[in-house]
Length: 396
Figure 1 (cartoon, rainbow, N blue to C red):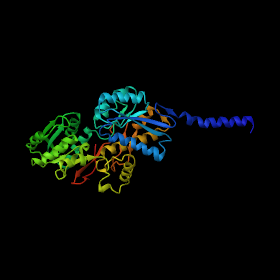
Figure 2: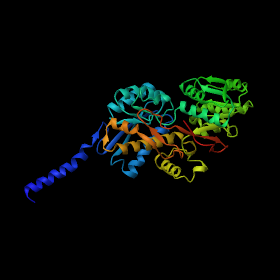
Figure 3: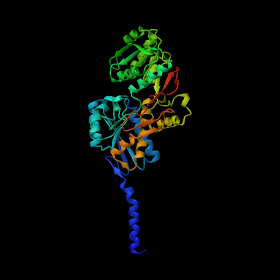
Figure 4: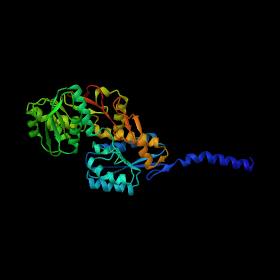
């Protein structure tokens, strides 16, 4: 080959390679070999979601060599569940650990405390472990993207479900006197119809407050349905005390209070029969999903990468596992453009995406103007041993 021909070949090779090289765009925490993600949680307490999120990527790294050839490093910081500490640890994750974004960080108050800093610095705050509707506000907080139905959305879907299946129901409401309980109540009131109406309501203060007095007052209303918009301990108390005073309404408990071992067993499994709740995930412990490939994969993953998970009480672990799968999908779509802006773009441009352990018919959709990722729920009733689906999916 003469000099001119050789030079031409080199130029052609350079032109061929250049576009691929030019497409690489790395933000902090990203390189040819690694992507660093930050998460905060109270490491001395119930941190199943954060631990499972990290465990999801431990499997990805071990069995698949990472994503797009890059290992995923999850940097977990202890915030003690305190907003001020969450803010300090989030700042450290960004400014010292150099993570690309945060994901699956635990707690409403801690993540609300970190939200302004992350938005001011244009760092994606993806899928906080919280049911607060405040994380679904793209107009004011575009860099914060929630996951799953909020408490408000769950309340709205509950109102629709009861209106369709229990027309004319007389409803008593027990609610925690904070944003959690009030969001549920606000959502339910907006969608109740067909003669179903709230005839009495009582609030309680704080997760550890007794609710016996409130239950006695609500029984006197003559209601045949009880909405217990309560944290797990209060939900268990409500179910147990309703039985103790001879009141037998249908009882709804929120998805976050649907643990069999932590809520229904303390309430008494016999007392809990016919209690109903809502979900968007498959139950890995249910006989109905024993042969489901998603459920088998989840149980096998948990045994190897998150051995503390009890399949009968896996809601928090499922949250971490599924947000891990969603972040995997986002990183794959981002390709070699691992800038913070492109991570946000990919996270907020999902249409009917599927995830492992989502119930059939439920998908993930996010757009730049609508951060409500899941808009459908399946209601289910407790049969004394397991949760059993009742009726069809309810959609917004």
